[in-house]
Length: 195
Image (cartoon, rainbow, N blue to C red):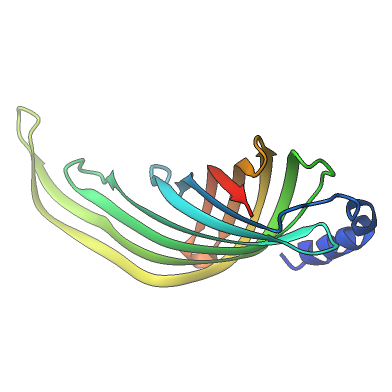
């Protein structure tokens, strides 16, 4: 993160003169979409409902963005009748650099911070008996939970396609690193409007 930020600033300074010619009639954008989020376990994959806001900065090829999201899902533990539950309330704040001069197509590499509220209930040790017919009788099990706010780094890239005068589609991929709380990757689609 510390190495990427100076490179990003230098790149913006070098490119701002050439990209300043691009006329952008609208400085603000709202978007709504869904993202497929992979959490720390291989089978812990859920879908996050997302809403975002973009603000294009004047005279430089950059924009600042905020995205909020919510995901809640269950996935099986060792015993399929017992479910792990995971919930996230998310806020991503980031800065993006416009790479293309086109008004219709744009690519934005992004860097920023992520603040996610985590609420998990994970099944731990399970003691059970299996009957001859395959039925599983659970005798006891333990759970571990986590309710906390995690702050981490955010890296991503977004492709934006303006298909009507003020309406666009966005495809994005991003990676968040919360250190001890794990890493998450998201791939998503959104539709938005400029104003």
